Length: 208
Image 1 (cartoon, rainbow, N blue to C red):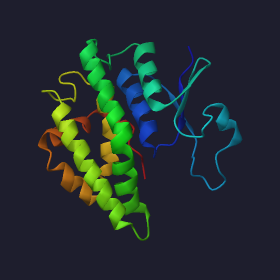
Image 2 (image 1 turned 45 degrees about the vertical axis):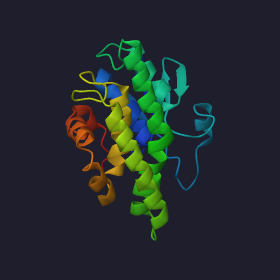
Image 3 (image 1 turned 30 degrees about the vertical axis):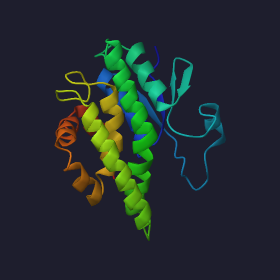
């Protein structure tokens, strides 16, 4: 069986989600660099892996996938290692709900409207940041209401919901506004303090 390949860049939230799943399963993999923001553009060959030119894409023994959630579920189901999805139908539905909520409402607001705007723009759009923080507050409030008792979002079992949330919230916490807002949600702050201690989190941290 060949080593799975993740195509993407270490700065990407969604590439990191897939890498976290592989790390938690104990799977050796290759990260094949693809920089979608490179000055020369996306290489032509990459569109064979992802027709929309986004990252990540994934390949394992000739089987190709794109979309981080689909890849993470495949990783959990195709490889040995600790289960990253609940066996119970309702808990699994809750996991999928949290993942869907993060994709729909958290990623754009937390990563692009707040963190990227604050960190990478010469003149940040303060109105955009304010709107993003408002959306982020709603996300954290809803995430608090959905979180089960225990160290992880679904309770005692670490799941794909945790691995989906961690890179998004981690990027948000690069800026002071994100850290200040998270402090107002102690349940999620305690969850964050736990997830950052995972070896998988350290191994997937962007260097530099």
